[in-house]
Length: 246
Image 1 (cartoon, rainbow, N blue to C red):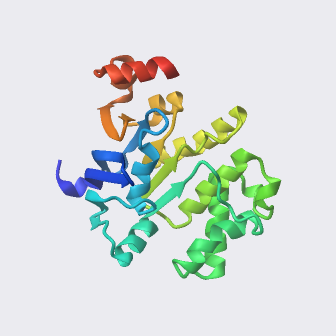
Image 2 (tube, one colour):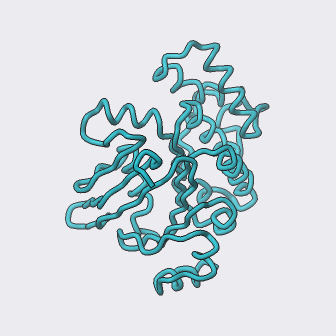
């Protein structure tokens, strides 16, 4: 497959925290419109790895190219990439003193330089898309955790990104709220959004992912289709991991 089909290219990415070698030469390519799920034990480097894609984490060695732009220390490159890459975290990181609508319009107004009317119209469209249009004028503290996470997804989508990164987006939620967030993510995937998702939600990975990847100790252990990954993994480390979560 030619390079222009890849929207994310990571080659031999290394990162150290002091002497701790957290990413040990990780390579990954992601196609446009592909959904890739990263799984692995705590501390395996999954979250650190995806956070290098938008320079929330620096890496010391290797190469990362996002939609044709090489991620370097050049701030202009970083700003360009961050405009194209939306991110949703475990914690919702919403501004508590702003309404739901204001949380969503902030970035398009300041970064995209859109006028208030255009930003607000988009915010309402996105709230409808994530199923909480009626919450637009409420404050984050008035919402459930699942609703807050859906606002966080809408906020990331407001920048009209080409790629969405999800870092364990349901791990801070009560179990009954997990489904409403995963449903939004399923819809995004069916709309063709390129997604890289760190999660332990096996049902979501089976149903939505094009590829499931196991990371452990800063390395990529196995990459396979969901069917092969969950029913016939090649690596002993993958089998051991699955025996603990299935």
